[in-house]
Image (cartoon, rainbow, N blue to C red):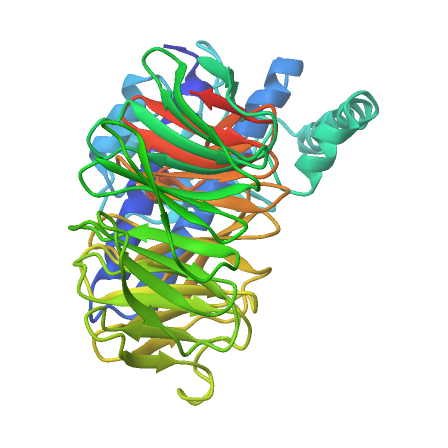
Length: 526
């Protein structure tokens, strides 16, 4: 561990920020809390982030010129002294110097005037500075008492100019990287990791992935090279492949991993029995499929097509069980609800519908017209169901997210336009009312669907988000610019980034590894 006092101080500030962020999430999920409480805590978060920026910049400048002295933020000092345990912790790290007079002060009634001159930032093991106060962009801080304040400010300005010059020099050397930094798309401190394995499975874009739910070592993939393949990860070998007359755009394993379905752009749907790889072709729409999903508890398969219909078959016999007609444009998303009792579908006709599988009956139609304009005004692009509650979120080309109770067909609420077309959605896997959305421009939105408020917009990528998965208390986000971004929703600005060598179309996350299928036909394992 680095024992430099400033580095230790920065570490402690980040720990306190993480605690405050957790308090903010807990407060936002509590019923009956006031807006003033949430605003106050949000201001506290902003102040802590600014102080972290100040200390971080201080370390950078100090490393360039050891003679520079910086003051301790007075407002942050006032927060620290409310907790004597924090003071003791800071003293232990030799970060602050506390005089005997300060020890006698009542922490519950202390004022800023009493703090001045007692809390002193130490920048090395021998020296410290006393002071009064001066103003900078962070507010009141302790002033250096050596009558050289103007000279100090000039030194700081010079160092900042030097940093700007260095950044300009970096732009000349690495224009693409710095362009992304300036656009707030990446943080230059992110770590770029190499993949553990690189498998060239296809010759063209990998369009679709599916993991066997029982034998998780088996991955099925479909590609624009017209091939369906099954990969055994432990041996990194292709154990089955089949070539068709068009792109394999959809694959899905059934609930017990015994059957595999594949959808071809020509409209053909194939079912394979894995124990002997026998093939069965299903009679259906014969137009391009956009949805292919097995029932979560049975051998029933559902497909949605470009001709606006959904078809349901017995996956064992291949017999047609139902056809769902009613949409007025192509099906864009759909599937069974998690309990398997209903079917839902979204369409380019700007509606989302709920169906009864047993009768093909349309139970609810959710649209802007039928719900008094409280729904999307453009194509429904994607949806996700909450893991516990009867709530479905839908994303649209109009850049909004809508929330539906699929048991009564009511729209709970709708977001304001967020940016670009919403193409991916993922609920947080806890009781918190948080959803993460990704758009076609590479932006990610953290949204509270209880208060219907945008919490944060993150410009993480420069091309469309392709997958958002929640696993092991973390979000994993992939994009067409080849990035895999991992972060804890409680610490949104603490990212880990993996960089694939090609745009990512599909992603699977399991304990200890991440698997992505890319535009160049490779599968990368991290």
